[in-house]
Image 1 (cartoon, rainbow, N blue to C red):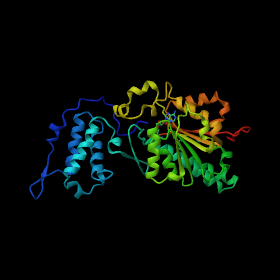
Image 2: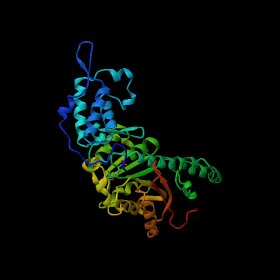
Image 3: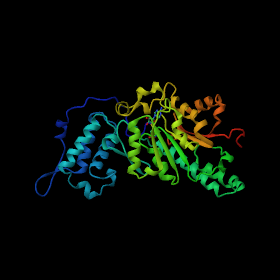
Image 4: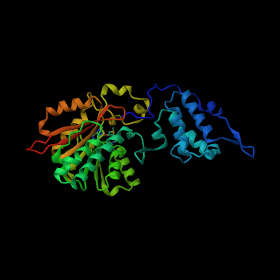
Length: 372
Ligand SMILES: C[S@@+](CC[C@H](N)C(=O)[O-])C[C@H]1O[C@@H](n2cnc3c(N)ncnc32)[C@H](O)[C@@H]1O
């Protein structure tokens, strides 16, 4: 879950901003007044961040300056804009935001927004900031539904000949297609997202699977509110239900009106308790630690999710999970002790660092075995 813009260096002492601020170099405009350009400001704050041991100093400075000047990235500025002046008001705003970064606040919270896929989401502490690897999880889920939708247009024989290679093509991990499940229509899939955080997974699925409906739940009220606000911002309110719900303690009955669902997805808290202290100060000081800590073996919430499947998931429905690289083996072992769940691990996918990161499980039909 630890993505870019998060460093691991210990918090250093922050010297006075005033003394360093006066060191900014400036040019003079035609009227003789001092002019500070975006490039000067980026360099200034980069030096400030470096001097204070702030990780990713250059990127942090560029993001903050770009945000205040109304651009996504510093690279998108024209040469003309880069040499033009920064106004007093902009300079004060950059200074205000950069002061937050000097206190190790993640840039995503400093600027109050972040991109996930091609969507811009509002970010508010302490709601978990979506990590880039989770975009891979979304791609796998979208691939699964695309695969199933295409299957509806083919005969069974055609499916075996044409669809299975397609399925394999969209996976980078192990994949065994469960032929029977390809019969299940998924015209308007209902997906349950457990631990929705900012809404990153839910809203991406709504965007990429146009007929889908999402039930998004989180135990944190700040997360529930942020998911809803992001849904409003992206105009997905009609297709999403956001619920404040703790799957470890609250009764399952709340979900029954929507059950059984076609898929359950989650990027749950999965960090092993003993690894929590080695997380970056940005994470430890600002993000909700309940979004990260998965208990002693990182499996506390993962097991709770899998235990919901008998009541909430359709036969042949899928579960997609983001996990720690040690988890695929542990989950497989645990599932072998729970045959009643009828869950079958069909794929382990790697993240962009080559680590086994995503699990795809499928629920077998009660009295029959799957065909693989
Ligand atoms: C790692 S974050 C993922 C957030 C978001 N899905 C994403 O990928 O950016 C895990 C989320 O699960 C929520 N969570 C943790 N334990 C939970 C529980 N028992 N029931 C419901 N949600 C839980 C946390 O509040 C947090 O928002």
